[in-house]
Amino acid sequence: MYFVDYYLSTHYNFSMNRDELIKHYTNLLDIESYDDISLNGLQISMSNKDIKKVAFAVDASMDTICQAADNGADLLFVHHGLFWGSPIAISGMHYHRVKKALDSDMGLFACHIPLDAHPIYGNNAQMALRLGLNSYDPFGEWRGKNVGFKGRLPFAMTANEIARILGFSEDEGLRIINFGKDMIESVAIISGGASSDVKDAIKECVDCYITGEAEHSDYSLVKESNMTMIAGGHYKSEVFGVQAVMRYTEKELGIETFFIDAPTGL
Image 1 (cartoon, helix red, strand yellow):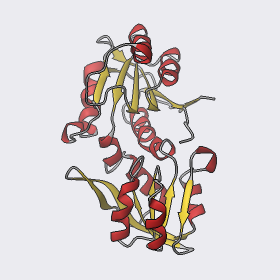
Image 2: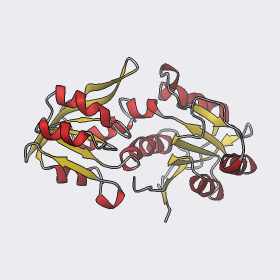
Image 3: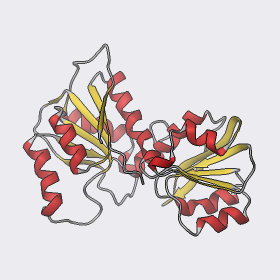
């Protein structure tokens, strides 16, 4: 089941020209500074019109594209777009996704690694904020840039308490590998498919590493290092960034927004 959550505002009905809004997002998220396999930025254009409503979702799937278009969005902002570093034929499922957007005159804007790494609106920064970390030290290098954060919790928590604060659940992919302290005091965070960075978390001697997915080989690493790893699910660990940009769009730009929650359970 898919849910469309509307965030009401007292200062709706503002709009921004297409080119101005795209430039604004590009600069805000520092997109051009990242050598990402994702084609970050405007992946599908719309006519040169004023943008009055923006939809937000984690993935550009047929479901989210249809939900966005059918609810009147002028632009769909996603973390996982449709184009990933190499040419792809506009055929099959890809054709139907692109055609739905074009027929609806709805643009598609994607922001992948820059949205993981952003120090304010990124997935990792938002999780750190949600947990109330006392510091936001950089963690996890990706192509010469740090994408994650590490720090100390405001008070010691169990792994289950951390997962609950972040909204992770077993129904939506949560896995906890718990061989560390009962009460966790320090964490490192990288969203999505960043299980390999558990090695850096071990080197940093944090009590717990938080990410989206866990690999089979992580179990022994975590066990033999006497630490804890929380894999909250790839999808659930990456709702934070798009929702943060959505709130920014609504509150700072005055543009109507809505979030499409399309969980994968993975």
